[in-house]
Image 1 (cartoon, one colour):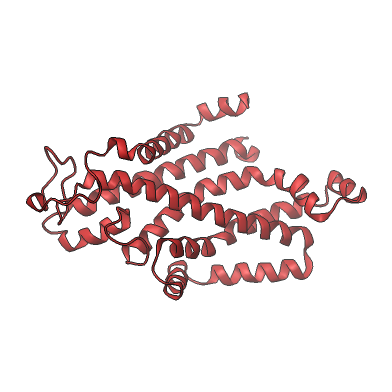
Image 2 (cartoon, helix red, strand yellow):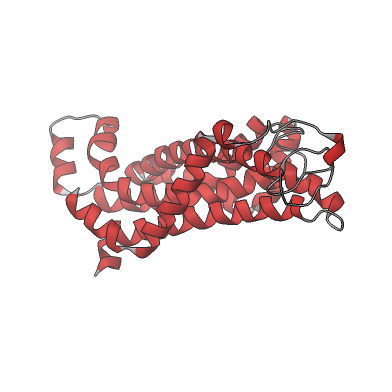
Length: 276
């Protein structure tokens, strides 16, 4: 643990990414305390007010404070990102373990499913799933998770194939341990490093995907302060009130950059080959 902390503190990308990540998390946790106004408070006397005194980032077409809506929107972004990643990691790890451990027909079938999922354009597949299930934030989570698991499954499968013939795994098999026990007691712990890195790198993609679907009107619905909803509404006023769209875009870039830098830093720290 001490060596990890030392290496982490020396990795500039990880440090910078972690600081950005913490700003987003703190903002999401304390949004109700930080925000000067409720996210849905309408003031028709202050519509399309530019950034300035009283409204740090200006107001939208209904007089709602953009700064407050962005703060509350960070809660949606983090919550949805975590939900998507939990589902895709669970699917990816479980299917990757089975494909790598059993091989044969199981591996062939799961690899085929992975290839089919990867062959389809992600946004098209997401749109098809959400359209079939109906527009809602939960359905956006499901569709995003369904198209995101193959990458994790492939990496876990490859790692499992390299571990399953190790002597300690053979010894556990000879002692009569079940396949499930071997996979979760001996193989899974050795894949956690790569799973953690992939999880960190998957979060910004999950947030961007769900935000994109909300932008298209398939995810969160007004007056929710989802960044995609704010961007979508701001497009109608881009000529007279560009701040409505600019600041949610900056928030998305900031969040994605933080997670990506932290993930890249974790990869450097946990992968011995990259360290050498």
